[in-house]
Length: 395
Image 1: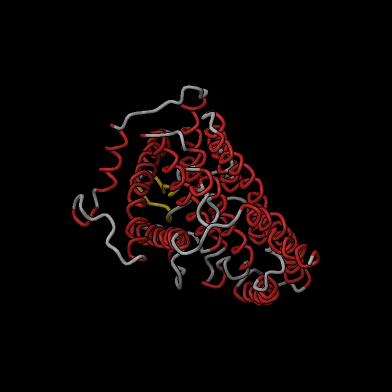
Image 2 (image 1 turned 90 degrees about the vertical axis):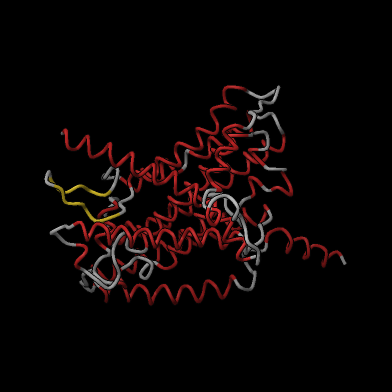
């Protein structure tokens, strides 16, 4: 019991320290990557190659004057940043990030809390952050802030359903909601990574993850061209920074979750020795490196998309969520459940590379049909097509 408590405390301190430092460096990475895309230098004055810029920004926000609108609800105005910030950090607690580490007192699972319902925990806590955003908008007593908060709640509801439905396909294939078992199921070969047998589920998940983290092209809650700065218009100093820390923490969690659910988690590709005992420190280090590289790739993807795609209009956002993502997730779940039942129960195939490749072929067929329709704008038309049609009939 003493070893468990000490080990848990060490893991909590180390993991959340790494996340906080990583989030600070991620803000610098975003600024440097966008500068690279725009053929400019970016921040490079504070420290070697600008590496101390996050420290300078943090110090600036610590000493900056706090503002409190005269007509704001003071209690909720102060609580809202914490209500957005805390769930963003807690969601990472159940994600395994490396193979177990052997110690003289026993193997230590490289996860803060290895819950048997880890995935459900992430869905539950991941949905709580929107309360902070909505309350920030409402308590500011600012109409633009309120609109940003309402947009955030509508967006969360619209895409949370599709995100949850896309992961049901993973649970059907794995048969368990424990994330360590999800990783173990994908360790047979590269093609048993869930991104192959569940390609469309991954597509639905990543689109919904962009919407859930309020990143471009889904950053309507803080659209500066429409709402000044949205829900955090009235915030300054560290309270303002906490919203950004929450956003980047959610990016890290979403990237780690995509890695775990669809890209084998900490599994090192093209090998099998890293997934079986006896555990060694070398296995722990290599699997941690594999997990980190995969997560960094998705973080780069978040940044890449932000500085590449324009923002959706709000009617397009809602149309995509309710008219495309939700029906697509439901239809895909029906098809993939039938395919898994047929291959497993009727043909008697065990889950191996052959099973995964068969499902991959089905996903390719469905993807061709799906994107053949989407590319022609038949579904995601928003209100513009209806207006043009009405104008044509009127003429």
